[in-house]
Amino acid sequence: MIISGILMLCSGSTFAQEILTLEKALEIAYQQSPSIIQSKMSLEQSELALIQQKASLKSQFSLNLSPFQYTRSTSFDEYNTQWYTRKSMSSGLDFRISQPIKWTDGTVTLSNSFNWQDDDNQSFGAKSTSFSNNLSLNLEQPIFTYNKTKMQLKRLEFNLEKAKIQYALAQLNIEKNVTSAFYGVYQSYKRLVTAREAFQSQKQNYEVIKNKVDQGLIAPEELFQAEVTLATNENSLADTETSYENTKDQFKQTLGLPLDIDISILPNIQIDSVHVDVNQAVKYALTQRMEIRQQQIAIEEGIFSLIEAKDNNKFKGSISARVGLMGQGDKFNGAFSKPDDNETIGITLTVPIWDWGARKANIRSTELSNENTEISNEEERKSIMLDVRQVCRELPKLLRQIEIARQTVKNAERTYDINVEKYRSGNLTGMELKNQQTQLTDAKNSLTDAIISYKLKLLDLKIQTLWDYQNNKSYLPVDLLK
Image (cartoon, rainbow, N blue to C red; front, side, top):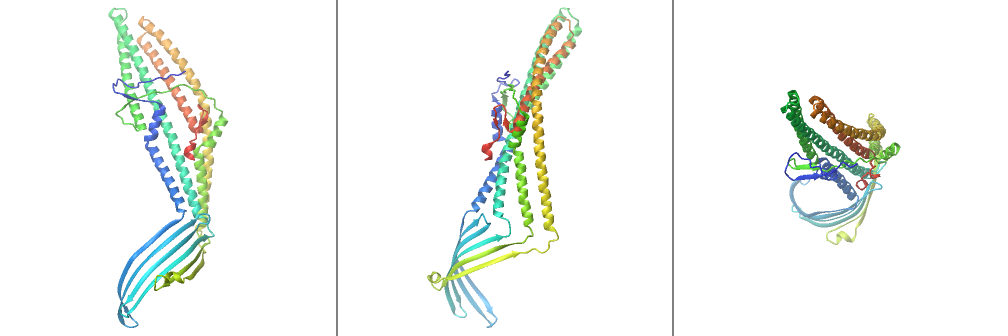
């Protein structure tokens, strides 16, 4: 049964309204929610950090220029016990190509430096001009240690994946909050409708009783009771209208809409009965829930931390190798005509001797942290299983409550109609009719509450399992998590 339609949810306003379906409300929230915007910014930051790291693994080109430098200095020669003046002019450039080696964590650098220098020692009359060119290939390679480059790259990939998960979770949280607020507006509106119906019904009853009292058909005391009941219903209507307006304002705040615009909602409160297999629902949850992946990432990051802890104060070293050609002369061609071979190779070792147990304590602390993360992962899985099983048990109960509430409303309406006739004929007191009106109001409100509870519980199941049972498809944001 579809109990839906365009609900112009306003209380006498003559201004144009913004009609919102649940889908449109969610679309607005996804665009304007501060939490979504912040999560999206964090996601973009993680993407840029990974792009930066990958770019740093490519060949880096640099050129350093020193177009001209002039120096004039006066110094004292202690051996000859006299002062001398020296003038120097120079120019040079240095071109480098540096290539990080991802697989070994080393770096290969090809460099070429060209320099010109002119010296003039005025005191001794010495003057010289020189040109030099230095072409070299350098290798820096760490040994007996872990690959920092690959670990840093993997950490940035994890950060990006965590940012995507956080963004997806923020979307799910927005959907849950907006849907709850959306049906909160509907719930408040239905209470307003019920309060209006009660007020109008009591107003008609009051007119009937007033006419009978004027005709002397019933005692004046019944009119007094009718006046009290009418005033009570009028006050209840005013309270309900205030509550409804407050609920709409809160909903607008949730969506990020201006508070001065008027809105109405177009809810779909069709009750879709879905069959849920508990074991299959648990399987969906354990396979697709992003919180589990977050815990798995935390475990892998813990392994990285343990590798770092074991590498601290540990025997390790590095290899440095350099081969090159060095040419020089007093003319430009001399820098290239007869270059000399230059080779350098060396090994540097770091051997820790005693650290007073600092490394051992750091390793054990990291191991305990990793064990704690693994326990949290197991508890997270248990908590997910528990929540899914509870939701699956709640759904059939809520469906039964809806059917009972519908029947209760029908019975309350029939009973109230019968008692209204008794009241107007003088066979029922005003207090007894008021009690019947209260029962009818409570029955209608209970039906609304039961429908909303079922809708929200069905959404909770979708979020808990990341499976859309109404459309029978996965609700995992695959495109986002790629």
